[in-house]
Image 1 (cartoon, rainbow, N blue to C red):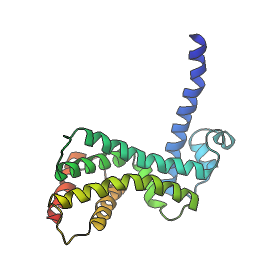
Image 2: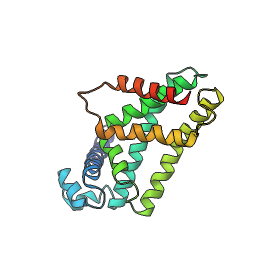
Image 3: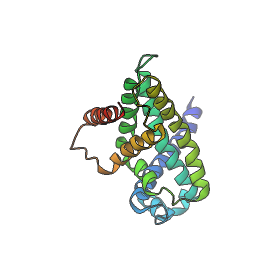
Image 4: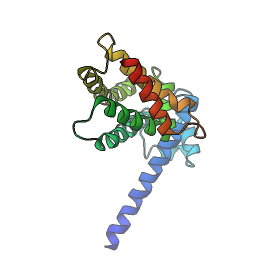
Length: 203
């Protein structure tokens, strides 16, 4: 038993260190940009030597890939939690509100991760962009299905482009990580307003 306990301690410490590195990287990438941030700066912000960082991440590209992966994973997981609360045959309106609540809650809980995605869009190495696109595509496919449901249920007018609607709502939600202030409107209030504006514009 003791051997097992002793064996897990380094792993737990390593996981904690990775968490700190990812959070600091997201913070610096979001404020300074990917190109202007060095691994040495990230290591210093995390309270370690630059050489120690390579024990956890092979390169700045690898670190950025995981930051972007986490950004979309935070959102996907939170949206999934909201959808699970609904009935199996939920309406488009209920689904839309769940998607908005999940997406908004995730990005306002982890604003540096979302801001990193926005700030560095189009400025990353091709390999990093390709990895991020694959993850994002899986999540956006869920929005495509939701928009199709809205069309089939007669909520989205026939003259509106589902693709543009999806881009508009996602873009608006993502930018809330830039302007939102915790002392302002509650997330619940924002969810209601986003949902109301979108639905009234679609009908």
